[in-house]
Image (cartoon, rainbow, N blue to C red):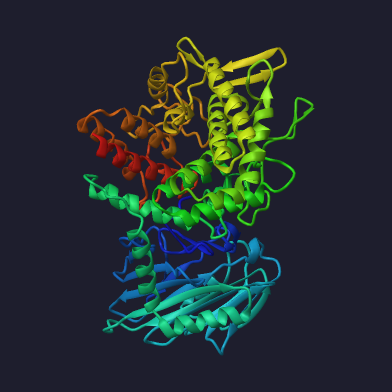
Length: 639
């Protein structure tokens, strides 16, 4: 399922496979809409006698250029032909660029297939060859996509446009080395064009591009820009991202160079998943739809809050402010809390949380998602102190949700009423949700005080303190209860070991009175560490999601990047000496070992083979790694 390269500018996002083939193309928002839907846009080579489509018989190396969102893919074919691609999305214009270098002892033809389904459906598209622009254009309503090329041998040499049936489309027309030159088609359409390359010329380079806009005039102007500037646009892209990075990178001190490089890549990869309108999207690897025709191209308040907490530390204040303004827009309705997830345009995302529980009406609330956003805003204000910005957000983002949480209390427990847990799987009263709600109310009290709302500040602090005192209910002797699950005859105490307990010390939640948290954390680590050569920490014992091994003692669940990085941060925090601190570097080495060669982190890792599982990249995986590295650097200065 993984995407080996992701390239974007906050308005478009392009995801490529191992061979530099387009798999996802998002516009006009990050995560919305996907105009390819995971279909493959094939690349093929005709050597004069046969066609070779990108596949397992090609030797391929894929990665990112240092310090920039520019990808490279180096291909060697069985017949000895070498093709190198350099790919980028221009930071300021909706242009996807692919620079091509060919090394061949014979004349060859490269075929580029485009399998668009505009606005996520193949109904009603039109594709045509525009002879005035020497380009293929596909459009529907207000989405126009143009593909073209130029090389020393000229631009598009041949083309074919037709209808597709499943996976079979115009790419089949290229298998005899020639294209039909059909110039227009409507409905479920695709296209392919050819570029010719001579053997061993001094400059055997070409440039292909895909541009997108809302009108024919817009894409025509972008096409002219590419023809005018050519590969200079790649140099502009490199300059932009190196300058962007230079302004935010920390002092890496004695951090190993390969881990520092992985940090730089993680920041850039995370940026590709952040929409300029404020939404921070979880993942955009559409192959996940093979499981249930659902995807991760949504904003979760939880993941996003952890993202801005760390990007704030890097000084990326504009990203954080756009996010909080986006949250304000979401919370301006009738309900003072965030729903399960949202699309990047602010519309409600899909959900599996029911509105009816045991015959009773129920609002499907995941309270931790709203609570962590308030904490993130308090940390943002603490760092930057922009009172005018806070005053614009306070009523909608802080006061109303905090007042709701103050009244959403389970009588007799003095804890938040049942809601869905951090993992979105269980409804109950949860340790993590309760702790982060208390933290949220303490944060809201500080923000209310700063704004001059003293009455609510006192209320928020008082209820937060009551919740904090009640956290001791989750700790019973040597047992840690992760959740109280409501049953007809009372509360079921679910003491399944759960990695979310590591978030309590990481979020600086006050020590719980009478509780030795460290001993519980040690027990959870021992219970959840994957006991195979792969290692890593699982979410909880018996985790079913993408399960590959059913021996819970050996493999309690697949190792997750976020959980393993939480454990790393706990080790970092406990370190008293440089030697102890450097032991935590083993977690960073684990992250690198199981990343894709390009540096992309998946959500999970196969506990036996180490291959990526679920989506890749996952924004939260990269943010958790960033958080752990920043924590390491802070601790290094102390010890």
